[in-house]
Image 1 (cartoon, rainbow, N blue to C red):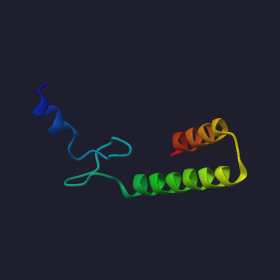
Image 2 (image 1 turned 60 degrees about the horizontal axis):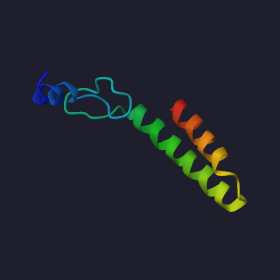
Image 3 (image 1 turned 180 degrees about the vertical axis):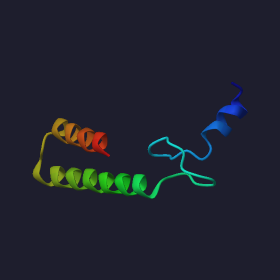
Image 4 (image 1 turned 60 degrees about the vertical axis):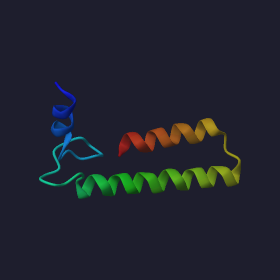
Length: 70
């Protein structure tokens, strides 16, 4: 597959889940909502951890778990 074919084959796919998003679309509203909610949760956990002195390995594990769910 040429580089141009690769670019065109990805057009219209959701940037979050990789599934077809529709004509002239790059994301599903539900995928974007899940992404935004997960990002907010990860930032909240990081802030809480920074203020409480939680070990960074715990923060990384929790963030990975949140990302896997979304």
